[in-house]
Image (cartoon, rainbow, N blue to C red):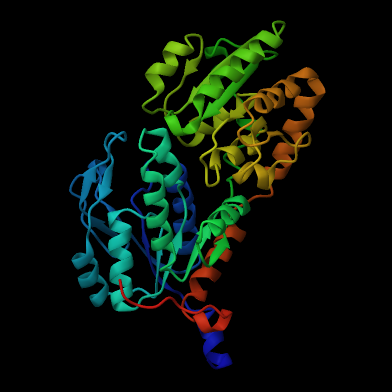
Length: 401
């Protein structure tokens, strides 16, 4: 390719189709990440069409240049959400009339598979994203025998794209070990103006039953089996037993299938349900200690949100925590699977007032530097690279479904 052609390719606006089973206003890490990427690409002048299943909230909404809606099925365990149906022929017709330059497939369900097959027939470049550890979730829902099947399918799916973007170095290493090819890192950012210690609310803490010098132990996320919430409960009880002189209150933000059982196990905890925007920022900033016991994250956006809000974070040394936390400096880490170590990390933060004060200050300073603009710029570069595989020495995968 001539140098002039390369220069044009690196500056011209792109027509991008982004395919996903989930998107805002749905509340989850994938939807949150994709919202930032979509807004960022459009702000940089690219033409982007979102392809997703029709949700109940769409209420007769029609497809347009920026949104292509497809049919969906109800998704078990997620009331009100739809899982995309196979839409191969619809996508073939649409992309034959209005061809995108490149596809980004964010989810590997029936809709994502339809997009992959349609793109390969039409020879449209594809980049995929590995956003969710579905193969790990299987074991939490009593279907561990499907773990190998899911891993094989995900490897097959992603190895048919130009590259797969992963959010953390630990995820990249794990997938490489399992035979995934052409993996590139695309980290996550945080809106440090929204998530800010200045959003702390004495009125909210008072509603929780806490005085200013008492400690709110916070958890934000989906209340589901894959989040390892049994350890959350055990950690909080250990903190209460070790520090009877402190008044501790467990605050849970989020919803999910385990909420009822957790309310029975933790009758004194405060369950705040789903929160968004400024209300979510106030809940974060009004906490003190953040417990994140999940072992199934590809990244864990809530961890950066908690750090930006100035909380003392306790997590396992993987995914976002491995990337952003230095133990004893801006958070506290435990070796993955070491539950005793996780509890000990939490207790270290409360052993001395200075430990928590220093960690909270350093957490905010670190997270404030993790903005989205540089990530969106790198995402754009990856999308452009799919248009000319020869430029970066990557052989395009063979065509054919």
